[in-house]
Image 1 (spheres, rainbow, N blue to C red):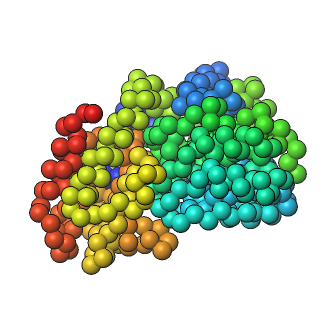
Image 2 (tube, rainbow, N blue to C red; image 1 turned 180 degrees about the vertical axis):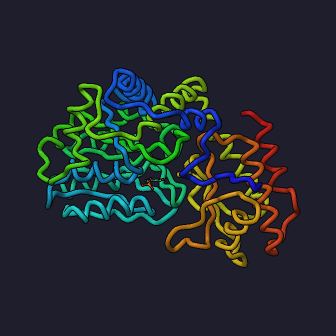
Length: 381
Ligand SMILES: *Cc1c(COP(=O)(O)O)cnc(C)c1O
């Protein structure tokens, strides 16, 4: 049987010990047993979000948590600033516009990061801005902005800062409280190594104030109801019970590994992947200065069809990379280094990439990506 190695930036590999938990019989959610589960999940997530704020649990994909942020913060005609430097920044723009916000779209060239000073100028020109929307790890381009500096700027204004940390959480640092991130959203199927189905929203006191004043109608994603339920260690609706139970185990695994050790490990894997790609003539897509360690996006050589490359890797060898999105379709490939992936997964991915690129006529010495990556992996510094 063919392997199915997901080197994609979501969904990610689910480790065997979590698969085992996911296969257990279901329990009822209105029970003391499940309340204990909710308690453990919230405590564990607070450590990863690095926050003392409320955390609400939604049953949806990551975009559901993004929609929850928008419908709970912005009333129709409210002003919002959304940073659009890729597919997921664009999602913030589309959500804000869908709900009738006057949306200032801060366009950033794909592969580059927005700067705090640009956001400061926009806020000075628009002092009535209610919320600023950014992305911790822009999964379409491999870029991470300076969230700390942006948080500093936004915290001095009446606006709240909303951060999409769907792919970034538990893979790269986010200090929710210290960096003044009023709302942080994430999901179960990226750094937390679980199937899609759960999404999380943290909310500061500043955000809760805005949530209570918001005039936009909402029902399933009403965070006021989530807050009420959470105060009774409950959820407003039936949650994805099986994933909630497995999440306790996932959070324990992360705790045992140590959050910081994980960040160091992903950075190490990222360096190895980049060295490997460079050795076979593949250039990093984002600016080196703002590249996230969540994934590596590299340009496909001009004479190679990137879509055919990823399709062959997946369909012939069972190794899945992500391709490019929108105008980058066929032009970049993206390899994740997140969740349960380790150095041998990375080496397997690079080996397959070499093989298929070579078959497609790209010129390089076979084994050079692996050699370069191995050298980085064997040098712990
Ligand atoms: C995966 C992802 C999302 C959410 O996507 P869903 O398909 O709704 O789970 C949002 N933002 C970023 C940056 C992501 O990588």
